[in-house]
Image (cartoon, rainbow, N blue to C red; front, side, top):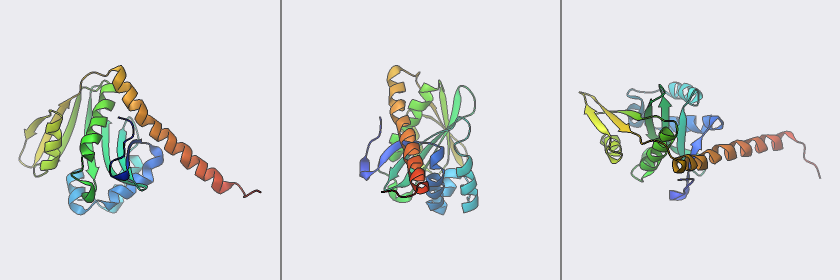
Length: 192
């Protein structure tokens, strides 16, 4: 996996230093996309609060960054030692470009490495794109009146899956170092 660059952007793991990028991404989502992601209307204030807590606990987030803007995000949120929820948000103009497939692949690798066996993904019944994404990963789909539950069983981790995720973790480290360097440069007086 590692970082790849379709459309001139990169896929990478996100960390606490990316809160502002994540908040800006969520706020750029149109009302329909917000409803699809959160199964309700979501105000800018709600999205800002959500971004602030998004990296807490054992959450793992991956994103697609293009020209300094986060355009797509996949979230893995474990709720016990064997199961987790998966969620996605992709800005309209970046849909149907394979971003969700790449991000879901990274989530499954992260789940494997954490010994999570089942990933759950809820989507609204009209969200055919998310249902199609779940089917790509052999999900079992359960249809209810207004929603669909997708369950993906993750295979056990392997040395190869650990190495794949390690490549993504380097992105978090690199981002943190670059941001820290920028802060230091802003604090030091200019010297000749």
